[in-house]
Length: 235
Image 1 (cartoon, rainbow, N blue to C red):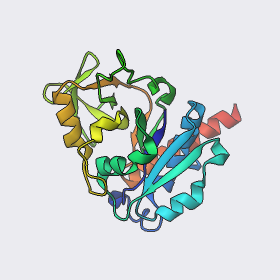
Image 2 (image 1 turned 120 degrees about the horizontal axis):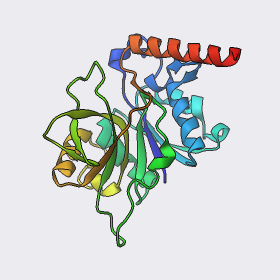
Image 3 (image 1 turned 30 degrees about the vertical axis):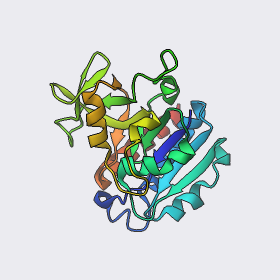
């Protein structure tokens, strides 16, 4: 399975930190957010990673190169202007291929076991019965109302209580068949349509997960990771 890291966002809420640095290259615990992802993907057995970028994208390519240092093969999907999540994925489909693929938001920090997701969408009798599998998390303070209702491994557009989409999911390329390449498109409407048809499975992850949406949350996570590293070093 191939993986894609979404790294094209401008990071407006992270300004002034993102005025000269793309958000995925901001550091926590001594490493860039995107490097934490690359290390965990490599550990999980992934070998090919596609990264989209727009704002200050050349900095991302310069920092990560071809992925050799992590034992990965990195390919880039540049966007002249950010195409939103679904638009960015659709643009990268020629690199992602015809099989299901993992997508991870570049602006989260998590310890989700990516290896366990490699068989999230399995064909039944040679055909895929679902188009997406999403990792859901408890609603964080900044998003108390959640996104979708979760019931017995499936998602519902309506219903309570709702959980928050983590930004980690496995998708079949057919989910994006109606997205015009090169045009901006949001993911939420596409997911809602597929959920309404019963084509989206999910699981509730209750481990480490942080949405790095503000400089304050970045600083808080950085402090926490540095403290953990210090305690580990002194043991």
